[in-house]
Length: 303
Image (cartoon, rainbow, N blue to C red; front, side, top):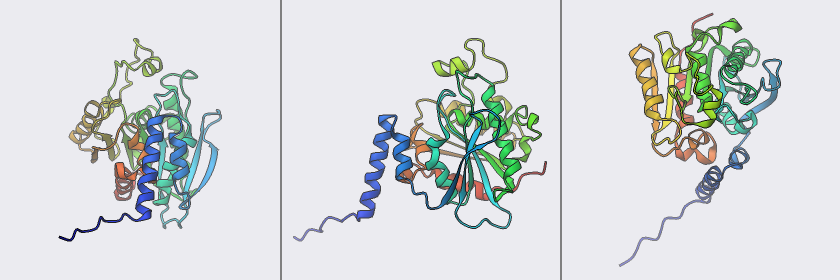
């Protein structure tokens, strides 16, 4: 009896899986993860302007990733992104893979630094985040973006920052802006209801055990919130997807806010954002989902 010969995998597919395996191994190994993802991510679809000041302090800087393609008549949609790191670590340059990925899909992307503990505690990083978003609103048109299609986005602790800027008007108000100017907000594995906490990093940031009032994004879910995208890993071991992501989605939906909720079964807390990088796309279609959300969102209300 003749046997069917084994199917040969193309060298391109083999390279893809090898690159993914190497990048995932780096993620599991620690410090070299973002360097690996950045090195393996193509940069041809975007141009980078690094170290643009949105404020006077050293950590108040952002990187601008502009699509290489021509801007549409109304301008590209704009995403202002904040990374995670328990408000104690992180650098905007670590997320070049994310900026390039979004820009290659036609999204003008701003990856912002913000002050971290121990230099500051709550709420100073929210002041920085609001300033970065205000800078995006005010400079979108000059950069080729659409000022009525600006989104704030964050992962993990950065998802907290994004949520507070989008839901709680206290932070944008001093900049002369308000959440209704945003076309939407995007939260990936963000902690929206997490105090009290046993995370020692977060305890220090939020003055454990004397937590300040009005620190939890879940308390600001309201009918005036911008259109929302929420994504999380179903088996997230660091931030509860039930307590934070699903609860936030439920409260916003009950208030009448359009919500897109995506739960990713193969991702972890860390690889959820890593999946924006080309070698890890197979983990979760989070890049496709976020771009689809951005592309479908209507313009925001005027100021």
